[in-house]
Length: 259
Ligand code: GRG
Image 1 (cartoon, helix red, strand yellow):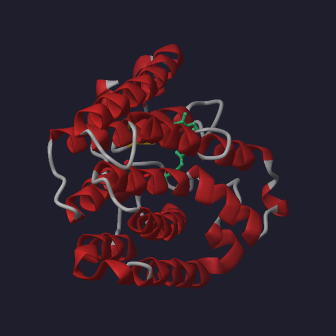
Image 2 (tube, rainbow, N blue to C red; image 1 turned 180 degrees about the vertical axis):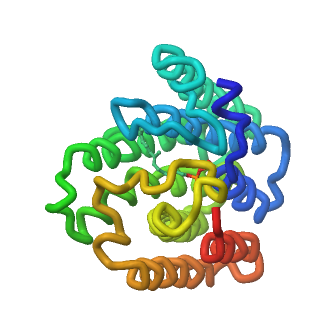
């Protein structure tokens, strides 16, 4: 668990949680714990994704994947333990925040919905089961907005809930995070063909047998779609005014990232 969680990841999802909560001045320990829970879910998903039964990856965050370092049984158990710790941490931190608009159950339920068959797990299942030659843009968007986008959305929404945000602000954050997550996945597809393992910390060409935005649209087309989605993400922040500035900076980071 420690190896999976403390390796050199970018922490983009928990940073999103902290940035959204911070927009409303909520920056205490409970929000930090909530952000850690989001990163635990992400780390769990990476451990599972890397297993021989899925991507069979050797390298992650610049070092051997968890199953290569500790064996498959330990990798599976570490992933499950991270997931369970994440739920417990969300429940505990939501309780400590004593919110007026949301209950602790709301936050746990929200995370569970984002991870389950209508979220990460559903997206991953469709990714594994669909034949790459059959995939069109609609299917690819569905897969990635679930497999990757759902956790970005949950990260943003949990941050908004932690700040007791009004429904309207919650919806703005959800729209922003949805577009950011999909753009992030497209940039991931681009880095898979354009970047080296030294840059990304993972094997290059990992997506070779899969349908990707780069295969469907070409490099320039994928870059254009990512830029368009980031444009939508930034536009959707208009109702937040200057408060949305940290989120604009996150969108700029995704536009420029090289790892
Ligand atoms: C039970 C949580 C859970 C998941 C099961 C395995 C699975 C279902 C889903 C896989 C989801 C997945 C790994 C999607 C890929 C998302 C993606 C682009 C990961 C890379 O994220 P970065 O670049 O990684 O933010 P770092 O290492 O920087 O954190």
